[in-house]
Length: 171
Ligand SMILES: [Mg+2]
Image 1 (tube, rainbow, N blue to C red):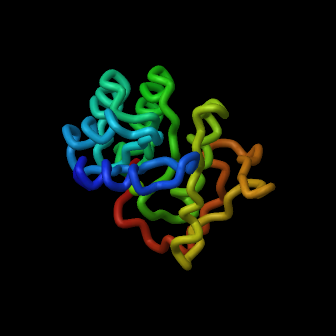
Image 2 (spheres, rainbow, N blue to C red):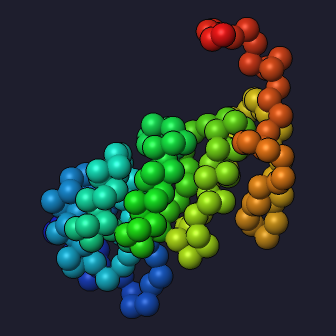
């Protein structure tokens, strides 16, 4: 969406509409322009790729939050650094991934559980996006949400038969 489209969109919406605008523009400059006129919270997705991007979003006030996709961040370790940068900037975090297995969902769940309540927008159950279950996830689904169990690590029991023969091993 370009800034002109955003102006026309905002003018056409009813007062008091409660929603969040995710990734309204494909560039930082356009997002900053829309940010300047938007009465609605903005969260970044594809523009927030790196730790520097998350820092920039916080420092420039480009957004109220980010979509923290673990694979987009480069894994759990850089993902938690993005979480911490977002937290320091007071930005909300949606912990998710583009798509993923039960194992990916367990990472999302564990990282999501480390985000303070007021900054956690949601976690995505990407386990529902695929038909093959690669693991059993120790989690409790309650009231539309999910809580991790007490199983150590990622809280999963991997189905090694489903995974098949490893493509690589390290000793
Ligand atoms: Mg998105």
